[in-house]
Amino acid sequence: MADEKSDAPDAVHTNNTLGNLTANEIVAEKEADAGKSVVKEKSTQDHNNKTVAEKEADAGKAVIEEKNTQDHNNEIVADAGKSEVEADQESDDSYYGHIDVYDFFVDEVPEIESSNINVETVLRKNLRHSDLKRMEGLRLLRKYLDKLKTPLQAPADITLTDQSGEEKKEWKMSVVKTNLGLYLREGWFEYAAKHKLEIGDTVIIEALNVPEIKYEIRFDKNVKRPKKPNKAKTEV
Image (cartoon, rainbow, N blue to C red; front, side, top):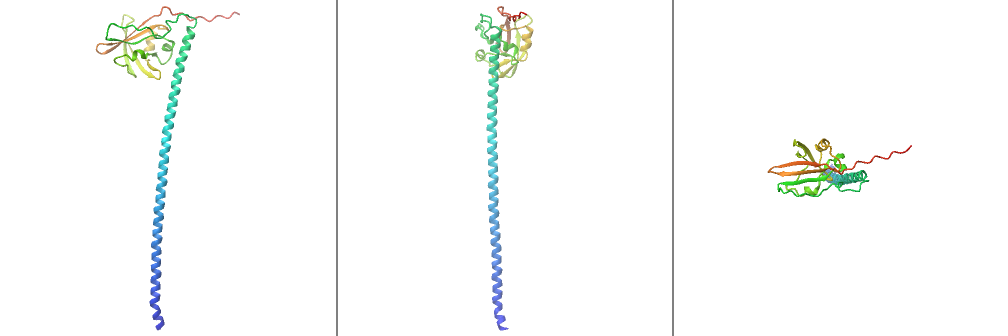
């Protein structure tokens, strides 16, 4: 019995030691798990940051690609505009190809300085095929627009008083801007049809600063305009 009693404290000590080891192991495991969670959370955050960075990079690439596409489209539109101008030139050349006199064919005409300082020339040109047949309308010339004290804005609607007849009718026309410059569109075709304007006729538009800006339009018929030759009939 004495031996059994002497062994009891050792058993208690052993059990306490094992209990302490088990508790320490549990704490260690919890700390390890906590460390793993921190590492995992950091990895997840890094992954999320990488995903966000990739999305931002993709968005940046998309913006650049969209801009490049827009620039490309603008180049296509500009090239198309140039092609139309060249087509107009070829059409006019073909129409008047049999004529030696080209003085009425050139769209720009000699400038005439007005003695009235309140009168400015907005346009003075001989009509071309493109001014009457193309959807763009009447092309305005920069040589006059750049000299205006009050620049012509676009888009805008302006009223022009017709000086070619006695009734002084007012015509409303729209000013539009394209890659090729400013044009008169809405109202212009009705005016041209009303007066039966043709290729080679001279159109003059002036701005009167008295004191508000007023626009006047008139035209001169070109008496030297040739008729388009008839195609030769093929003999049977």
